[in-house]
Image 1 (tube, one colour):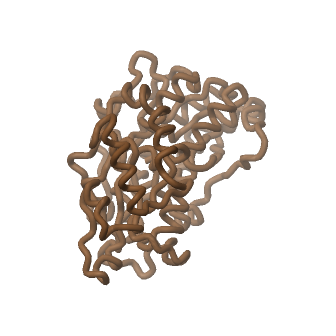
Image 2: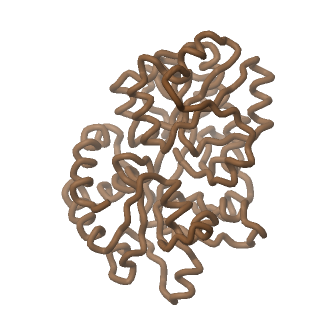
Image 3: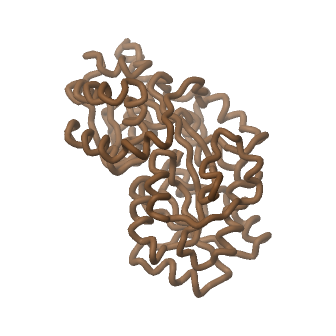
Length: 360
């Protein structure tokens, strides 16, 4: 979620991951010549605790190289374009909004990760071919700056309908649905809510109410949103942002000093359920290492480590959530959802229509 996907600059600075330069297209070639290393291609929000990663490296004998390749949507597009000469062995971060695009382009080869039987049934897809492994889930939702609304003595929005009200004019920032996974998820949430034709009318009204569109989540949340630590530093002036239901715990965990209550809230009537997957790239140079890495992503240790690193929900049954995550995160009982087949059939025309409707 993908996200998620939801990792802040402070987190990235504090984690000692091995980063590989995104320059050129030779990542796949270098992996083919080094069976002791395995490369994970992913989005900018990927994170894992240093000791958890080191434990996997010690047990498996592989050195993990992590190539962060932009927002989830952009990373998926790059992976498809470089399919015949991939930059790595495993791709993590394709979600249910983009999954059919990746599968239709033959991005992944078949592999059923060890522990897949422990993954909650509702997240399992492609069971006939096992080209992807579910890794996490999250809810894309509008977040709000609590202080802004308290100071203005204004109730924050709760639903998609609320966002159209004049009192919220020029307050919302969202991501580009054509380039950003959260942006696309928010679009799909409105399509699920208002139907195949109604979502277009909704976006015309939302545009008229001053919604601002930026390229990706990092810019929206850490630069434009007034409620985040990054947004405050950047003097962001939008108190509403499309992010995740699990974003508030991040502001608590990395607050200095750490607040007792999250400074941001979640409009639970604006949520769309996102599921992220990982897969063994079709042109992987180190397929054995890639399979071991997929086993790790679906395993107990990584699944338990995710909530306070990527701020997403594990998909493995029985995984205990940290107290801080459950105390400050928001549970969404009735998110908008959409059948993956319907997403596949409508995603591209909907993005095209959305692009023509919304100013950027």
